[in-house]
Amino acid sequence: MKKIIETTDVSGMESLLGERITVFCCRYIYTGKLISVSEDSIEIEDCGIVFETGELTTKEWKDYQKLPNNWHISLQSIESFGFLK
Image (cartoon, rainbow, N blue to C red; front, side, top):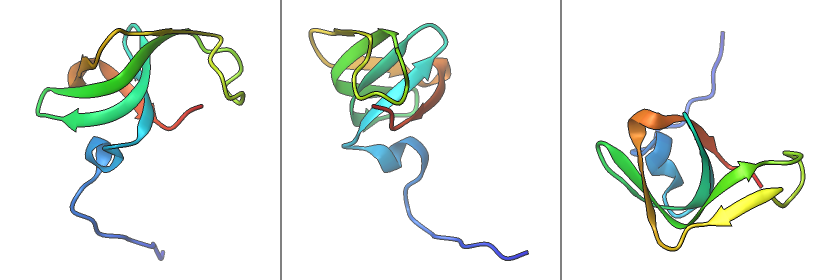
């Protein structure tokens, strides 16, 4: 078997710093710009909670509520993360 392998110094959450991401957690879905990753949490700028996604292939959330400031999310509550919408 052959594989293409790229080596970088950062991976996982750190590789997404500065990007607008969506984070699926045990209770809520958050979206915003990832600005900080620490041992136990991440910090999201221009963050909001997605209460209803609607079609995942559309550009807008069906029910998105913006939070008034940056938001910290515990790493242990994160189930998945990535680019969406």
